Image 1: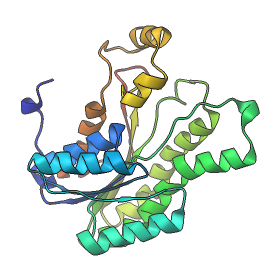
Image 2: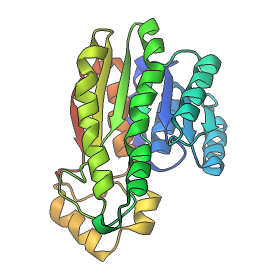
Image 3: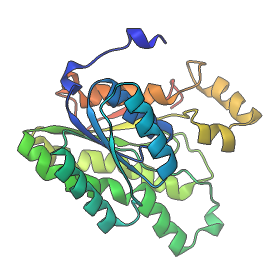
Length: 257
C-alpha cells in the first residue's frame, strides 16, 4: 500500500474529531490519520507517556497539535468533565470515534462480579456516555458522524474473553439503537469491526505459531491486518463521502468473518 495513493477527504479538513483511547495501537493510528487529513483532533487515554509522544510526533510532521488529556474512562464523571473541557477548548465536535477497549483474556470460572463490572466499564459503558456528551454539539453543527469500534472476535466464536465478547457484541445494538434518534439531526452512527489487527500489544501478547496458522487458514487475504487498515475505513465513514451511511457494521478483517 502506497500512502501517496490513498484517498484524501477534503470534507475532513478543519473538522473537530474526538477519539477515545487514542494514544496507542489502532487509536493512535486513527488520531494520526485524521491529523494528516487536516482535521483538528482531540483524544483521551490513560497512558500519558505515549500520548505525549504521539502529540509531539504529529506536531513535528506539521499537523495541527492535538488536544489530549489523561482520562480513565471507567470513571464516567471524569469522562464527562474531560469531554466538556475539550468542547470548551476546541468547540463542538463533528466526529466521535469510540475506540477505547481492552481484550484481556479471562476464563469464565474466574469472573467475579467486580471483574465483570470493570470489564463493562472499559469496553461497553464509555461509548454511550461519550455520544451523550457530544450530542448537543453535533446538533448545533447540523450533523455529525459517530464511529463505534466493534470486533469480529465474538462473531467467529473466539474463546478466552467472554466479558469482552459480551461488551463488543453490544456495540452493534448501540449503533442500531441510536441510528433513528440521531439520524433526525443528520448525525450518522456506524460500527467498524476489526479482525485480528497486528498492533504492538497483539504481537507481544497473543501472536504465536498457532496464531500465524489461523491467519493463513481463515483470512481470505493472506496479508496481516494493520491499524491503518482500520483507520482508512474510519476516515471514510467520518467524511461527507459516507453521508448516507448509517446504522451499519463495516467489517475490516481480510475476509475472516
